[in-house]
Length: 470
Image (cartoon, rainbow, N blue to C red; front, side):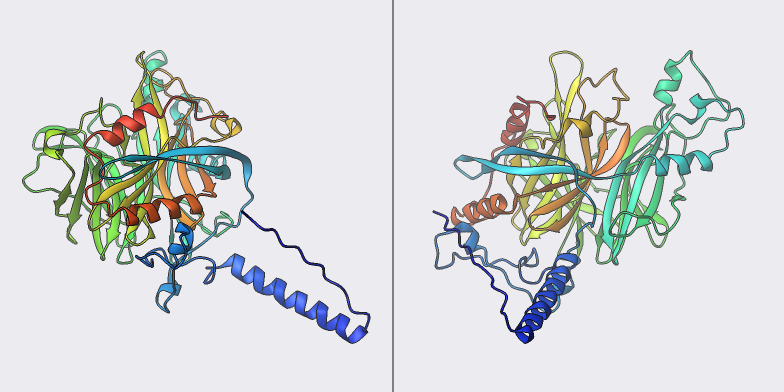
């Protein structure tokens, strides 16, 4: 039962007390603004601080009491100071996975749009590429895949500039003798209101031209490891006489590339969608989500498997069964729990596919998937704001997550591609109580191994019963 309390405030008749009251109100308002504009040291704890035992109350949310230390107060808990548009309230369903049972979790959340990169970046790109013929087909491109992160009190954004040569090759077989690469990476820095304070630029990443379609660097993810700002990106390249599409790492501040390798393991021809994260100051990757496979890498990005879920060796990655795949990097939510937004691809009866974005909570050391949500829903004014570019393989509008910023324990910002047409930043909020319950139940049940192989994938496939639009 919830008890609501109300109070009345009376202005004293005495003028002296009247001015004292006004000053007190002003000071309280200033303090409140300071709390709301910066890291809250009262309402929220550093995500890695968690009391592992229950408190004196049976409330799961009270059991997760947290504390700050001087060093942890420096954690970059930031909030974007932007207007929310197209707010959409809906009930988010999901599953908490334990050793012996799966627990349905339902909770009301809100999603909204907080930033669109178009048309500003589009206009800048048009001015970067010479087009003396004036042929619009030569400049058919999209600014998509926004990877965003906070770094040294700045919002750093890396985006994919995709020249749609798939469409050009279909249009009367247009062949431009001055054709560009299919993909470039573009970067720009912003303030807390997403106003740029420096000009954007193309990243000077050397790329080979291998494929007729999809040459260049694409699908960036940006993250830090021991204060090193790294960009993970996909790039086609011939390796050992074989055409491959693999991941590479670009050091953002020092401008050099490293290719992650897994000695003794044969990567597939197209091997991407690894989800990076930092744990104990070391680069890790979620290689696959179900079965859960974890890579740990040294400073030269030489990696080895340190965890493989139940029967993982009997369940290699397959496009038809691995519906849930890497999306954003994993970020610390409450140690040792990490939060990400993964993407899913589920085949329809016809030749088309459905795409979704899902909250994923993972525990580390030991590793296991704790919670996965159904697709996050957004307002139709967001998802239908642009046409579906690749309508020959996708019928339904979609969002594709590339990045996550934990603004506070109740709010995340997600960098997404909408319909392969534009990049945007969404906000999802009102999930703190839900994840607090999930973490509390997970701890109380002493879960050790987590879901059986393909159990998460089966849930994700079945979660597409409704539309992801309003």
